[in-house]
Length: 218
Image (cartoon, rainbow, N blue to C red; front, side, top):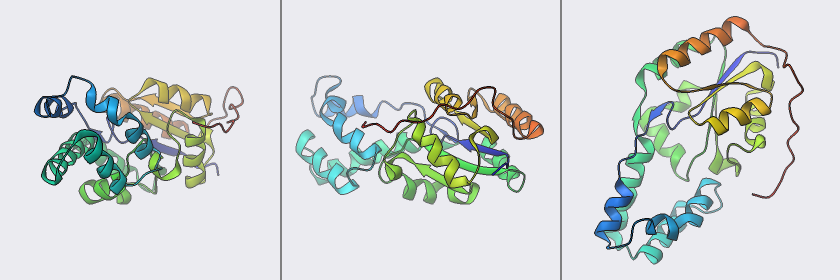
């Protein structure tokens, strides 16, 4: 349980995921006011992120709420996944591949139903790290402290032995509150340097006790 560990976010870290403007294009095509797609689909997006609905139900709700026929539904979902999956961060992925055998490696990602299958097919993240923890599979999203607990448990490591890398400050702060070391991803160079420092230092004793997670309804 004292092994050094690095856990990565996916979107914005292992994947480069700039906004493509696909939602705005669909709103124009469907002659909907700006913001309508997310307004109508907000609860569906949320449900898909914690796995309380499946892909079939997502498609059914898109058909009902946006009036999409079969061809447009297929095109809509293709645009959604194009932005979601982005492109691989090849430099960082190559670096992570070189870490195998030197430390425990994992992924903790806020996700959407269908993400594992697509990311496995495109990027083989299942071969890059030992454990992948997706929010849609555990029913919990970052920054909920329970998400970090699940990731550490999956890798059989203590939080203080882990460095968590994410591109959102709120998740980085939540990881620290859960007792982990954490790094805000801004570019590959600084991230690689931070990982090296973590591995050189090894497992650390936290300066203060990690906060206990209190399960709550989301």
